[in-house]
Image 1 (cartoon, rainbow, N blue to C red):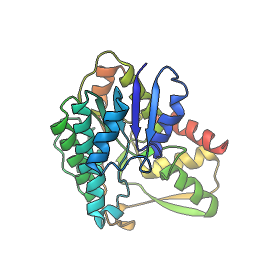
Image 2 (image 1 turned 30 degrees about the horizontal axis):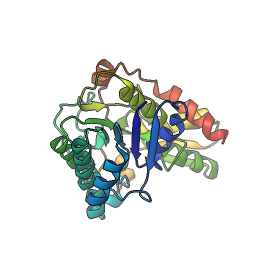
Image 3 (image 1 turned 180 degrees about the vertical axis):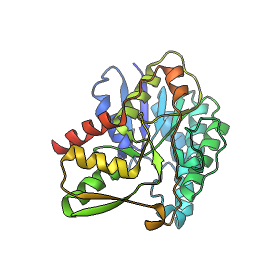
Image 4 (image 1 turned 120 degrees about the vertical axis):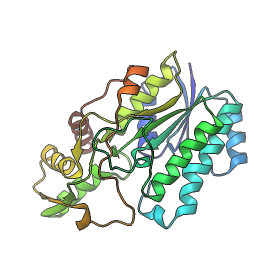
Length: 286
């Protein structure tokens, strides 16, 4: 049996880990969200983690309002960077394996091939900068940490692109979706499975890893697939990034190379469309 603490338990990934925990009764899980623990309070973090004495801590907590972060910098950095220092330090001091979730936004998106873990980072917005600082803080305070960068996360839980598209497609005859930004979606349930697989391995390999579903698509193609799978009657029109200006700059190409995590932990990646189908079926049956 392993004792596992999950921080940010009410977010998309935290919620999927809660659901998955039922299938792992041999482990003891502690699910903490901001009501149970203010991760921006170093003393509270230190005290809580020392008292729980887990074997693993998974940090799913993050400030993810990408556009709002441009004007909300202090809170964004407090959660995405400073809190990571407190968590990483507490895990190091108590000999706890630390898994921290990061993002494709640490890259600038100027590439045309999948980013590897050791490629040069160059965030283009406050959110990306704060998440990169979080990575730096994690490894500085806990060199034994595992960092998993992911992208385009969706789930039956929380707010995300898939749920937004389903809602818009039910209420509008047509919508425009950006067609010149490329990436790979991640079904949070698949990432939750991968995290449990890493926890259950006997061969802990610290470092930075990438995880998404397999395949490369645009947001427009993603929306089109949501339409096709759900049977919506809405027309989806491709638009350019320039036609949909946002406060925060988005990477044009943020595909992540996943070879490292597959080799190190024997993680099997699911095709993006298969996972999207599973999620939409689940949403439909709720």
